Structures are given as structure tokens and as C-alpha cells.
Length: 232
Image 1 (cartoon, rainbow, N blue to C red):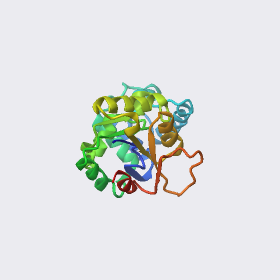
Image 2 (cartoon, helix red, strand yellow):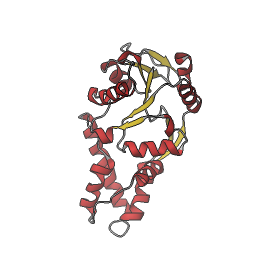
Image 3 (cartoon, one colour):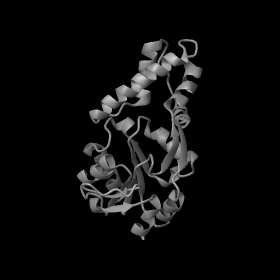
Image 4 (tube, rainbow, N blue to C red):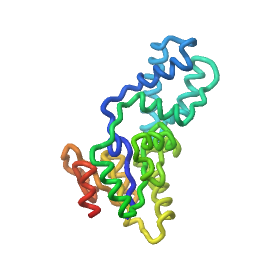
């Protein structure tokens, strides 16, 4: 067995999210002498709308690669060269993250069973930043690789994005086949449909007990801890 996890609301929950919390710290460090925060906040709202347009096309809008240059163009100065640590800090300032209950116990069980684990995430932040955040929560070491749509350029349910993970996972684990891969995620359209279209099984974390509209999920679980019974 090989397990590929979704990231947000699967491994980490956000108790609250406000982009402006991260943006204010960014503004104080780099732009407070160039513009009022309210002006940058309004521009940040425009960038959110831009992101939604990219997502409608199945594309990611990477924060470091695409958004930071737009702030420099708008308010002047050099493009901020944000480190991975700063990128992770920004994302954590925006979100009040917590580990999903039962995650550590599940990952420890999988590790003892020597089940290879990966993460495939839709995010405007790089895989390196997402990895660093999981390391801060003490679980980064369980995963062999973390892919972010910020690095790939397309978002789930992109078949190409799923194939990136599937190809690497199978190359890493000779003897395993596509039928041995289980994707775990909470979002039906991006996770369940995406995994199905890529020809791999999906365990849908169906927190609200909704009916599977297209009968595509191989398993339905109410929480990530439900994987324990599936894995055995």
C-alpha cells in the first residue's frame, strides 16, 4: 500500500483564516514606508479575485512567484525575495492551524507498517513551505515527498498533477502498482474526482455525512482516524 494525503483540512485544520493577518506582517516589514496598509489590503483583495480567475482555469496562482512581483510593481521597490521560512511564517500568520485529531496516531501506525506516505496539495505556497509547517507540527518526517500546486502550476483535480505524485510513488516503491495507491482527502471535486480520474482509489473524509453524488469514493470515513480500520 501507498498513501497520498491531501494537506489542508485533512492533516491540518485551520481554526480561523484571515489573509490580512499575514499581509499586515509583510507590509510592516517591507512596505510600511511605501503605502498605507489599507491600500495594500485593498490590493490584496484584488489579488484574491485574480487567484479565483486562475483557479477557474485549473491553474494555481503562486504567492511567491506571481503575487509578490505584483506588489512590487504596484507599490515600488524590488521584488521581495521571500525565504521558505518567511513563506511558511506568512501562511501560519494567515491561519490558526491545528493538527487534525488522530493524525499522529495514524501516521505512526503507517510508519510502523512501513507504508510509504506522500502529500499532494492545492496551495499557493510552495511544497518546501508546506513541508516546513508540517515539521513544526512534528509530522513532516513521516512523508517522503510533498507536492504543491504552487510548484506545479495546476490544481487538483488536474490529471497531470495527480500523475506527478503517482509516477514518483511507483518509482520509489518497485513492486507496487496503481491499484495499491490510496488517496485521502476531504474535498469531493478536487480529491475524490481527481483520484478517480487518475485511476487510483480514494478514501473520502466525508465530515458532513453527505451522499456520494457519483459513487466514486472507494471508502468513506468521517475522520482521518477511520483509515485505521481500512489499513488494518
